[in-house]
Image (cartoon, rainbow, N blue to C red; front, side, top):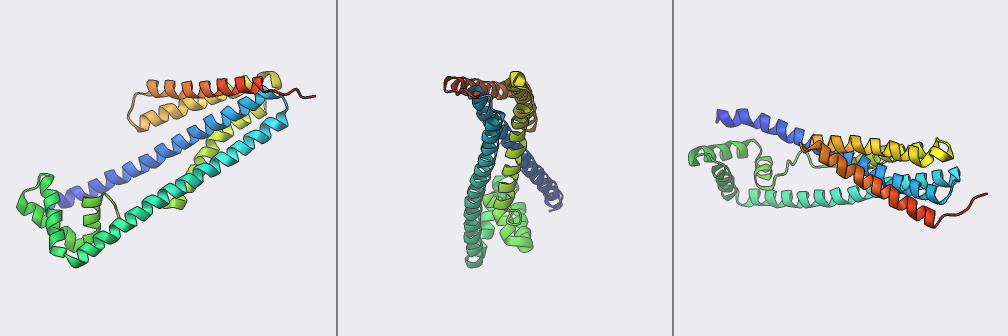
Amino acid sequence: MSRVEHAHPGEQHRNGLGSRLNWLRAGVLGANDGIVSVAGLVVGVAGATTDRTAIVVAGVASLVAGALSMAGGEYVSVSTQRDTERAALALEQYELDTMPEAEERELADIYQDKGLSPGLAAEVARELTRHDALEAHAEAELGIDPNELTSPWHAAWASLAAFTCGGVLPLVAIALPPVALRVWACAAAVLVGLTLTGALSARLGNAPAGRAVLRNVGVGALTMLVTYVVGVLFGVTTR
């Protein structure tokens, strides 16, 4: 039994670290979305007009709409996931209340399938069930920690903040320089930002950084090129 007791805190630590890395990775991707989305729009508008006010207003509108859309989508998604997890936990609790012996045998079978001997698996299942039956069964059978269900509001605010942080970069980069340097300054700032987010996301995922950066920068550059051409084709003349 001691080997299980000593392993459990480490397992919790790894699960907690993985959860934090997932949140950080989601934040990086949210910032990346903000950079590409807002950059594509403001560069497109800059191709259509040199009016700084029009470009800034369009950029701010894109930033606000994109951030709210990301937050709303994340809230709905996580709420649905949380409802599903709660329903699964309620069913598990019902089974524990109505057929505890069968559930304990099921838990023992899970640990036996993981490599424990039948006797040790039965002992582990008995001790874990005695300590916290729902938590033990939820983690082993469902992969859910009943004490750490993701909050929809936390996810929504995190998405909103990440998108906003990314979207501010192209908006500021295109609003401050003079007309002749506006698009080039924005493009340079965006490519630097995408290089950083690509490298960071690759590092978090233990993937090759070079390939991730090239993909990230390529998508961003293509987005700005296409929207700029569209802006030029449908441009207006300002006086």
